[in-house]
Amino acid sequence: MDKRKMIVHSTHAFLGIVHFISLWFALAILITGGDFILVIFLHLLSTAVIILAGFSTHSIFSHLGANRTAISILAYEPVLVIIAISAFMLTGSFDISALYASEVPPLYKMPLAFIALLLILPVKLKKSPFDVGEAHQEVVGGVELEYSGIFYEAIYTAKWLDYVFCYLLVFLFGGSNIWLGLILVVLTFIYINALDNSTARVSYKQMLRFCLWVALPLAFANLLLTMFNIL
Amino acid sequence: MNNIVVQIILIVLAPFLGGLIYGIERKVKARMQRRIGPLFFNLSMTF
Image (cartoon, rainbow over the protein chains, first blue to last red):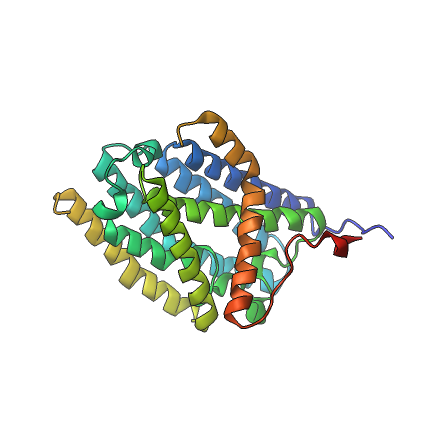
């Protein structure tokens, strides 16, 4: 028996597809070494679209998930923007290609920004302890709950694209040294999985507090150090 | 990332690469919990 195509409404399904495509665009610009700010805002657009999709249904879990995803954006997006500004201070350009071509790996010049990125990655990838956005025991997957069939596949593939996106951000810190970039990616992969396995979920307030009081000041300190050429 | 062919291949294959990372992650996570985890490329289960 064929699966029946079940959608909540056409806008909801459309927003799911837009989420996938905009994330793929953000990734394409990141790979081709385009503008860092454009990458961040395209990524933000993809998340904003999925939040809209969550709010467009009548499901309470979908609404809760959309709320929590919005709070996640509030937690990690300022850190990402400050990392982009730090990269600008370092290379004199928002072009990611300048970071790829950097002879001295950005890791040596922006170590605190790298630590800040490591702290917000579990939020972006929805990993424990910061997986409040899709906490299955609480909100049953959040915004993705009302999707099914090919549209759920789009959402799920977007999640895979997010993995590539995040690990490419880590890879950037290797600069022109590809091996350093790969080592950083592997170590980050192990760190995120170890963290996911060994920690319990915190509340969204704790997540927000942690990101705004720990990760954001770290990124900001890195910005000041880069600005005054201390590193 | 200067090679345009490599860039295009990476962009096109990004969903598959992400899926591969997700698969490896499931395996690694299972090993950390002393489970075997999913089998890779077990196409026989699809038929």
